[in-house]
Length: 173
Ligand code: HEM
Ligand code: HEM
Image 1 (cartoon, rainbow, N blue to C red):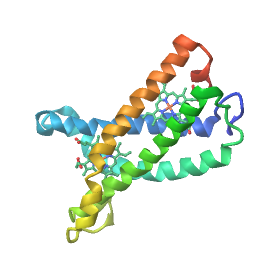
Image 2: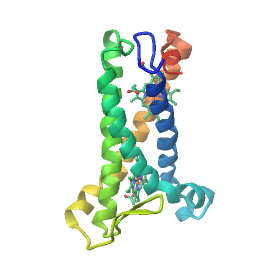
Image 3: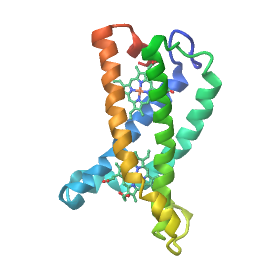
Image 4: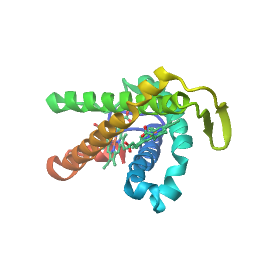
């Protein structure tokens, strides 16, 4: 099933969910730069892709948002009070997934570094931009917030699977 139904998420929503979950997990490894000033395999092998993958994630979250809006009437229902929390939590994930790459790009522009993705120059190096650097300084606190929310999200998915046993994980798996 390509589209979502009341019984479960369709192929496109699942591809967005699991593909982006993998890439976001990779992005969060950027915290690894704090260990030994990045002088270890995480810092050297995975983190150099941070900007390119971040730009890719910005494109994906825009497409995913349009897809989610188009599917909002077909999706599995969120019932009761926990459903309200689930909807709010998912909404907050979308907000952070949009702000995270935007503030990342502002770090690059604010520092005058320009922007390259997968070897293609999108914006040339230039002068430092004070306001962009100030807004870009939110990138790290937002990353902590996103990481906490992702941990909460995964915990709830596991609680549904092993404690409540209501088949929530099955509709996304
Ligand atoms: C969903 C997308 C993204 C996530 C989850 C993410 C996550 C992170 C994390 C966890 C850190 C480490 C912060 C710390 O150690 O305090 C970081 C730093 C950084 N990110 Fe991202 N990032 C994303 C997108 C981007 C993009 C698109 C760019 C640039 C175009 C970018 C540029 C940077 C830079 C330059 C740093 C180091 C400077 C700093 O800590 O402010 N990020 N990011
Ligand atoms: C970076 C990691 C992740 C992010 C950003 C994320 C984000 C989201 C979002 C936004 C939704 C709402 C549906 C949608 O619009 O696609 C969702 C649903 C869901 N996620 Fe995740 N997810 C992540 C990882 C995981 C993991 C690792 C699991 C399983 C252990 C999981 C289990 C689920 C389940 C079961 C649903 C369906 C919930 C429902 O129908 O009420 N997610 N996720």
